[in-house]
Structure formats: structure tokens, C-alpha cells
Image 1 (cartoon, rainbow, N blue to C red):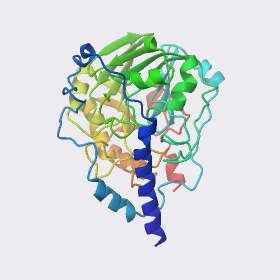
Image 2 (image 1 turned 45 degrees about the vertical axis):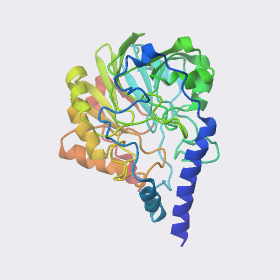
Image 3 (image 1 turned 90 degrees about the vertical axis):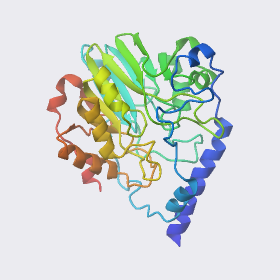
Length: 367
């Protein structure tokens, strides 16, 4: 009985968050026809995937039923997740002529590239939710506080879901952020949060922009967007290719497995390192989140060298245990002879030294 009640509570919380999010959702500003004309993903009413048959979610009643009977053992860690603290002094000491990447949690990355600092999908809030008291709560603190972060040359956003676009982080960091690079339509939310629209660059798939030593390219992802009821797919979503003078990084954002990975690899690869989404998957929503096995195949399609799993280990967003994505991606990477790096949150990855990192399987000690 207790397990059933807990499952029902989980479903109710999810429904409340989804329904109430409309209160906080700011529709994207009216996007000019000239901008929409640039996007092949706009069908005249909303943005769509290349394969328009791919669904944003599965049958809601099947999902509710699955949650009702769910065994939630180990869906959240009962032990402390190890976090390697990062200080401003440590960041400043990193050589400006190399590219350094730090996993901050979930899909958030801090990059020092071309001597500048960049944030990718920075989420610092306690919950991936429109509320401070309800919704998925983070398992661990960030390796560095927003106050201690240095001046940020650019914030890069993949899409507007709460676990990737954090209103609190945007508002707190806007005083120390120079530019914002986002998919088409997201500027509406940023401007409503106090960001100067002249600092925002909106891109559509296959568009590139160069800024402060970074060449940034928006590439297709198979996903969806929305922060509340009634705003589904009115803004674009994307994956990103980051090129710091030949140091090439692929960041998947969120998305299901698709043939576009091979095309991206052919056109823009090979990649020194890929950051691939491996969490929040389920057979009930197969089109919008990759399984760990699919993420490894996508890495192969991209012609990536080293792979780092992201989108797991920070929030409980699906029906699997918190450590299952790590276990499954490790098995698949070993079978396909993929060089997998699984850093602790806060660990510095320097691209010039990718082959020298020890294989730290830290989560295995916590199960």
C-alpha cells in the first residue's frame, strides 16, 4: 500500500508541476517572419523534428500507470554524491591556450576555451521545476557557486525545459555574462527575465556564428520544447558543435536517437570529445531521450573520440535508478571499444590530455 501511495504521489507531483508551469511560462516573443524563414524546422505553426512522426511523449495514462506501480528503490542516492570543489583561483590558473571542460551537474558544463569562460545549459537551482518547493530535487550541490564564477563570455542554451534553462541562473548571472547563444524563439524568455536583447544571438539548425575564439554551430536534435501548458514547440531546440580553434566538442542537449548524428559527423566531425545525454529514458517515450546504448551509437555516428555521459546523476527524471545510466553506458562503451570518461562533478577535463585520465568509476562505490 505504501508503495502504491508513493507512486500516486509521484504522478500527482509531476502533473501539478506540468499544469502549474503555465503560470511561470513566458511565451516567446513574436518571432519575425524573416527569422522563421531561416528555419526548416518551422511548419507554419510550430517547430517540428525532421521526422515529424516522432512524438514528444508517450501515452500519458500508460505513464501514470507505470509510475503507480513503480518500485522507487535507488531512484535517488542514499549516500553523498562526490563533488570536487572548484575555486575561482583554480579556474584562472588553467592555461588560456588549452580547452578545459568541467561537468557541473546534470547537463551543465563550464568551459574555459580561447581564454574565455562559457556555460552550457547552466542549472544551479535546487529543483528542475518552476517552483522552489516542488519538483525534482538535485542530488548534490554544484562544484562552484554562481557568485564565485568568473565573468562569462557566453551562455549557450540547448532548449527551454526546466532542467536546461534555469530562470534563476539566468537572472543571477546576467550581470557577469556578455553574450547568449540560443535556439530561435528563446530570446523572448530571456528578455522577460531582464537580459538585454542586443546580447542574444538566436540560431537555427546548421547556422554558425563566431565569437571570441569560438565557432558555434546549431545542429538538429530530435526533441521538443515548452515550459508550460499551451507553449509546446513554439521555440526551437538544438544540439551544439563548439570549435575552439580546432578543439572540437559535440554537446547533444536532449534528444532521441536519429539519423542526423551521422550527417553531423560527416559534415562537422570528427570530434575530440562528445557530451552525450544518457539519462531520463524509457520505452514509453522512446523518441525524445536516448538510451545509454543509443547514445554510444550516436557517438560512433558522430565520429567522436572520447565520450562523456551527461543528463544523469543529478535529478530523478525517469523510472530508472540514479546509477543505471552509468552502468549501461559503461557496458556498451566497453563492448564497442569506446573511450569513455566518467568524471566526478567538478573534475577538470583538458582536451590536450584526454588519453591520460584514469577511469574513475566513482558511482560503483556508492551503490
